[in-house]
Image 1: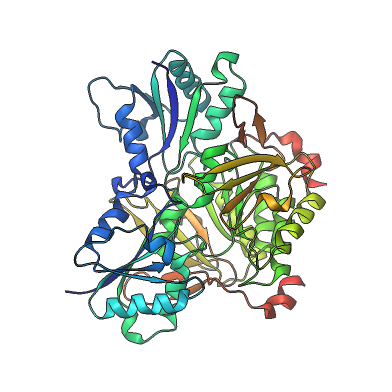
Image 2: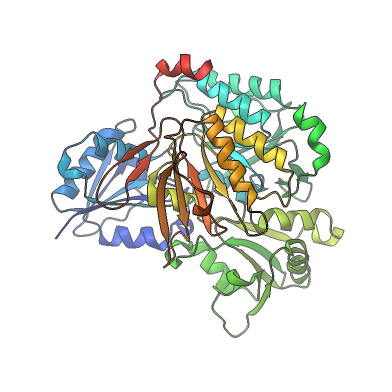
Length: 258
Length: 258
């Protein structure tokens, strides 16, 4: 029997957001490879070996998955969210490109999942309902100047924005700087949403503005969404709705092109 | 019994990409509202009324859904892909904001789905594996100058890009202009992916470069993905893999900040 690798997105945490395609792949797998908390979401069963590894060993884990497949195993690499958005898919292809020739034509499929920003946006209303961008705020794998450049250009383009990995204990200053840059580029009333542990039991959604946001509103479990200049808030009982209208009138030209 | 509205994403077409949460909502619904081809994906059953409407009547359709819910119905508004990405969620909230006060505190949930760019990226490898932006190329609801501005700033930020609605019969020139702008801003070997009818029986994936891409490679069924300057191609049997590495070395500074 020939082996394969499926790089699968488990969604943000709620089992109601795992696609049937991913569930079927897990049912067929002989081996599951991934970061400890994601592998913990897969039910144990006879014939299935779970290989849980720590954070920051993405290339080792990818090589292990490809090697198992080359030996004939049916391997699911599990990611949170969508595997193609700041998750395992890029790591597996990097390992493939730099690996032995015999891996090159292995059957490898990416199974998409609900990525955190889309789950967070859904909880808030439709803040990404118009053009938007998605930025990983961690400078572990890229220089900070590139993050700052992207933040400024994204604000000038009037994109809504989604931020992954906004703040961790080892780099507490990045999100402080991010808020400063955004306050430089955007008006104080710009809407900002902090969505923590989306779709899980401890989910917490908080709507704020750039003027009122503080760095401690974000941590590594949080996705941060920033509206465009046109994003609107609808007051109602409980958490308000925020959405970005589909329509941009041409009268914005003078302001937009100055 | 009190009514509700759930704005649900059906994913790009394959039933294996419909989340269990969306399937459960459809099972509980009394009414389904949506654009004709999306309503056609919902199985008929006793107790369920299907309301299919034509394209470009999103606000009428949203008002209808909210009115039905106000009357006590359990209404699912169906979108293709994810309802929050160039789909029905923003339209429903626009109708809500401008509608009667009695709608304001209706129970309204958005159920996320697999949006086309993530399904397309999965088929190609991981072209959106690093920071990226998402732009609707239709100028039906926004002026063309704003699209051009966003394209140029996105290229200068070195985002990967995903384009929805790249080209229709009624506006054939927009994608011609888009390719010109990208050739202005990016190198000729920049990778570009045309993903048509992703996850459906007639799916067609084509990898090209900015130098070789032609406008007819896109239509309204196509999502177009453009790599960043660092996106790589892995040759193998069949369609090559394209992916954007997770790591950007600081040596890019001189080039990136000039």
